[in-house]
Length: 438
Image (cartoon, rainbow, N blue to C red; front, side, top):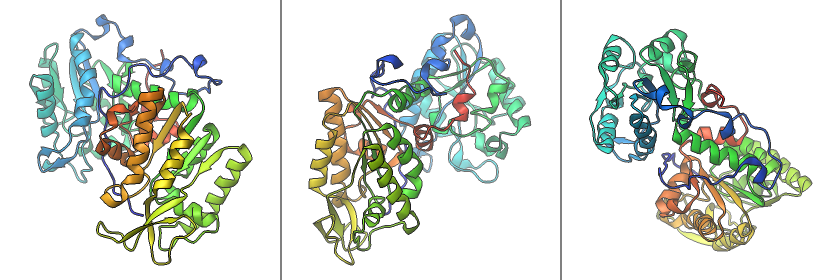
């Protein structure tokens, strides 16, 4: 089962402002975490005197999809606006830096941040000056001549290979014109790059913006201090890409729902025939180990009971719904069946915290979208009707939630694909670890 790489989205106003109470009230013993919201300073912890007239470097994630020079989804830019508006209101001079795409050898016009600066200016109702570079005298001159409330955008930091290498000399040049640093780019916080980690060695204070703080509140709060019963929905094409997060969540969650292409590796591990469905033979034993661990821990792993199978991987494929133990030879599974969605609804009905990472099927094809949209609707209804905390992370599941029209009903939609996974796995995120403690 092949899944396309989807873009990561966040609706800035989607989540409630305080979904998680202090750690002691989450119904379980708090597990210490290096990323607890209380541990890191945010812009709200800074006084007006610390911001007024100061030149602030803000790492945003405006890595938006482009069709030529046209932005096809501006959600990431919109998500950066609350932090920028706050800093402006305190009299700061704001300079945004970000990457866009993956330029190979220096500046490429197709990866210029010009369209992002224009769109940010439209959203702010003012001119956002695009600097011709991200380091150097021309940048310093623009920043030095700016007035309180002005907003500048540096050109793509990845026009320099030194950015991803976190090269000390480049870091110093990037930080040179500024007084302090704000990281509001959760999607790149798992990378120790010059603009995410390196500059904190030169700019103090270094704090989080609103978006990064909210990501930590929901993701870290859900995993380490979430109210029980807690469930995780893990989907996507391959066990190999999700095994570490699956094992980490198994230790913390009461129920794990497995969907997507990775289902068939688990079904093969149970001795079932899966036709031509995607299977990672090298991970069949891993799947057996996960099932055995769940049984030992008394945790519930829910696999599909019925499958929508197709005679080929195509939008116009012939399809049928079959029991999970009756997949015909020559057919491949591409989505959950309707009975599986009913079982998932029942299993999740009493859950207080639910984390979803990955889709249930090839939702990009209408014939194979029902399983993913079905579970998205279940989560949205639980959030609205029972007050469950629902956190959606990972590109494909976020894209599917947006397409379903139910994103606004979720507690939180994460901006970070890789960063979300690594935080759920319990890994240290360099861009967060580098920020000042409260």
